[in-house]
Image (cartoon, rainbow, N blue to C red; front, side, top):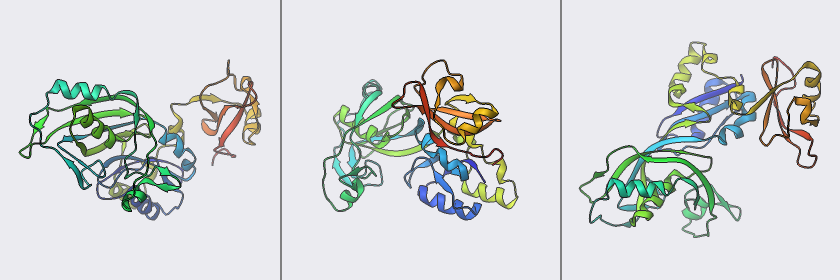
Length: 308
C-alpha cells in the first residue's frame, strides 16, 4: 500500500497517536506524518504510506493555512490556552480594528521569530520543551519565517474579564510558530497575548474538504475501499518542475547516475528540485550538482521498478 492520505486530525490526540492508530487499521508499519499538530489543535495532517514516506519532507516544506483566535490580556507558558498564565494585564480600553490590523500587517513578509520554550527546537542537544519542563532557561535561537498573509477575519470581542479576542487566518511557510504570531501581535499592541484557538485548514497541498477522519478510514477499510481514500505519491510533487524521460534514460536514472541537465531536456541549470517521471510514475528527485555546473544528481530514488 503506497500513497498519501489527507487525514483530518481531531482534537485530543497527538500526531503520533494518529500514526499509531493508522498502523493498526491499515496493517502496515511504514507510515509517517507531515507536520506535527498539537493535541488541542485540529486540522489537515497529511499521512504518507509505503513509498509515500519517501516524500514526507517535501510535504513538510510546503505552505500551510490556519484559522484561529488571538486573545489579548494575558500570556501563557506555552503561548496558547493550554499553558499556565505568566503575565496578566486587564485592558483599560478595547483596541480598534485599525490598531489590530496595523499590528498584524507588521507581521507579514519575512519575519524573525523566537521559538516558544514549549517547542521541539533543539538547543545544545536538548529540545526546548525539556528545558521548560525542568524550569530551566536557555537562550533560544532566532528563526526566519515567511508569512504570506495574516488577517483578522472577525469583529474584535470584549469580554467581561477585560480581555479582547478576534479570529484570524494566516498563510505561512514551513517552520512558522502561529502561537508566536499571536504573542508578537500582543507585543506590538503593548499587552500580553496568547493564541486561544487554532485549526489547520491546508497542508501539503491538501485542504479540509479533501481530508478524512480516522473513523472514516476505519469504515473504508471495513468496506474494502480504502484505496479510494489514497492519493498517489505523485501528488506530493505536483508543485515541482517535472520531466518525463524515455526508456534509455530510465535505465540510468533508476541506478542513480549523475547526468547533465541537458539530458533531461532542460535549457538551463535548474534552481529547484526536479521530479523525474517515467510512464506517468514518479521515479526520482534530482537537483543541480553542487560541484559540476552542467550536471545533476539524484536526491532520492523513489522507484527502481515500474509497476511497484
